[in-house]
Amino acid sequence: LFAGPVDFLKGVVAMDGLPPADRPEVCFAGRSNVGKSSLINALTGRNHLARASNTPGRTQEVNYFTLGEQAYLVDLPGYGFAKAPVPVVAKWQALLKKYLSGRPTLRRAFALIDSRHGVKDVDHEIMRLLDRAAVPFQVVLTKTDKISRQELEAVVVQVEEALQKHPAAYPELVITSSEKGHGIATLRAIIAGLE
Ligand code: GTP
Ligand code: MG
Image (cartoon, rainbow, N blue to C red; front, side):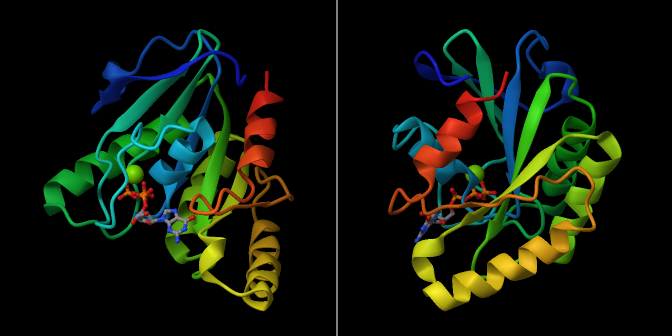
């Protein structure tokens, strides 16, 4: 899927605002601040394409990016704690859940897990939703530049164990650092290999 220039298409706030389901797409889901937008920037080599920030709740819409004419990349709002008014957060959480369980052209969801924190209850909640919707998903460990090799080994074991509960999960994790560029080529190749 990774052919052609990447561009921002639109930010969507309700299901009826989604573009026509006429091509494959992949999305990036995970807790607020896990590094979804930064990962999209690293993948596309465009530093300011998706807005990233240290304030949890930066991305508040379902943001569509075009990958040439062939595919969409989708940056999602985070789940869990966010620095935004409660009703606003509730609205985007509802959209997020509808999107993840009702988008026919969603080929794969990347479930981002912060390598410093491992799998949390809210991650299980989202992964259960993906199981129920039969959306194949793959875990991406983020921010691995912030931990030691031993800590990384431990979190990999924890995540692999946690994934056994989730039939829609791919067993292989992708280990990344958007900051250092680690794992980015691997992830790009995975996306490019999807049809
Ligand atoms: P929301 O849109 O709020 O849900 O957050 P997000 O998941 O899109 O996270 P975002 O990409 O905005 O990153 C959050 C913070 O983590 C920013 O300050 C990033 O610079 C930082 N960050 C993201 N990826 C990495 C990484 O690989 N390494 C390090 N050290 N910091 C990172
Ligand atoms: Mg974001």
